[in-house]
Image (cartoon, rainbow, N blue to C red; front, side, top):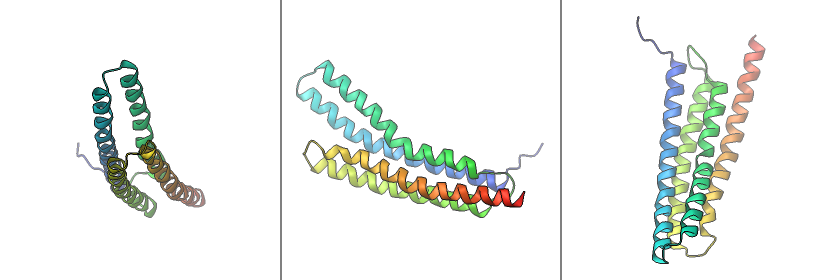
Length: 156
């Protein structure tokens, strides 16, 4: 039995791989800040409440950081298909690729800002980045899914 993957399936796997790489890089950059937060807790004296609060906030931030990538993966499922890849699937892959590159740039920049700015609100930039990524990616991919569904309904 030969293994034959259609170009649409291969493109979808590539898109998911790109999103997973972007998610891993974003979580790694967040973990660099987490290390500093835990070291600051240890230098102030080990207080269980501070450690638990820091751990909880990092779990919440991890969820926020991965949300744009999960959103694109879910929206991409609406555009994915079988057989030959169509222009909407290729465009979806390009959107995912560009948004992943943008996210890596923004998270590296956010880490630099947080590392050099000692204000108590500097870490909020890690909330702003995923919000912007969700907004940009959601609008672009949502429009793409809408156009794809219109084409599918018109051709039916």
